[in-house]
Image 1 (cartoon, rainbow, N blue to C red):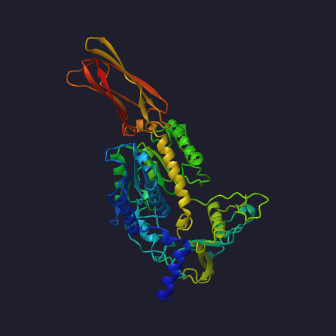
Image 2 (cartoon, rainbow, N blue to C red):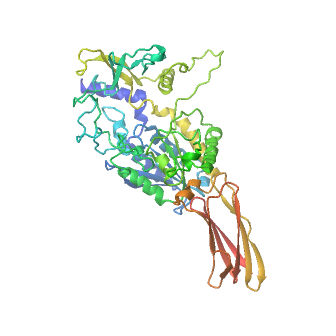
Image 3 (cartoon, helix red, strand yellow):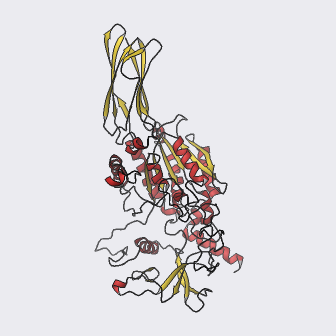
Length: 546
């Protein structure tokens, strides 16, 4: 094909689909530096390098360098979900333009890592477009001792790697009754007879009976974390936390004890519907269920998401093994939530409406809802180049059979044109503000000072959590990594404690919970009482003994 024609085709695809509005690594880096140059509240630094040598940018929104209770927002962990990076950047932009930013940051800090897996951006913007989750690490995907011996091939020369369907008596797929472009598994109980084999686009280069099983996909960072690591699974890495991106993010999370909660724009969803409590899994040696008090907290956060911010109709996307969101909860003890950020909007149409209806899959259909709903939505929005219609090709591995190339354009299902993201980002900004307002807030009563006798005083103070959320997670007390609540009395040289502890440690303080502390102190002058923890901030009281 003429190079000029190919360029025009790719350029046309970029304009039509909206890829030109997405940030690549260079434009992302430039954009973040622009934020830093224009706002005194914004600082940008690298927390590590990817396996391909790219910086992992950390954006900090804060009024000062003093550690404050913080939220960590991550995105771009799985390369197939580039929409998360775009939304994270839009969110930073909206926050920096917000009139109440100074108020938001007066007591809190926001950390953003917009692209945890920057190597994966190359595939999204590659001349040959194929969905790729992993980083730049060379991987032996089929574990045969060779790397990249069976890659994809662009059989119809459209610059896209999609699928191939082969008419074959052993096929298990048929055309969907809802949309003939889609293929679904044949259901023998409904007298459906399979017609097609479905393969990825390409040849069986090494003649082992598998197609495109080794193109060196790299390591999917969202499979490489420490909780429930999927050993030997494709894309999970040769061992847990094998990748520099994984270690850099974990180091940052563990070393910054002030991080109260983690939010991830990714392929999973536990925000619109809170995690469930499983008493058996929660009490097992390896805990694999959110603990009971944390589930109640999750329900409150979910209500902030769906009711306060009105972010509804999110798809159910269960957690997978080795991902960051679960590791942040189970191993780092932080509240941790994940959301796709954007999904196909649900359209309600009245029965008497003359508008075009948004079709739903039939109840007896085995159709994947997301694919059918996306095609209907794309048609309604006049989006082209989201699906490659099935076209015949000659396949050397099936010389006497009908072969056709087609399917969804790579990345289309999860990454809509950028113009559709702004409304969703605005809603997530509102949710973020609601969450910040709900975070734990330590308050104290005015200390009561009783003079027992000359230079002997009893000091009593009550500490209360006035926020809507606990001071930290219940699981934080089990893993013993999260900074515990501490109430401490700081004395001067001429003072001493006659009765009571110098400091009191306690487990997480739930919303509205309180505790009273008392000391018998010998001496005079000022006494300092400090109470709180890294995830709530420390409140300081000055008491005069006189």
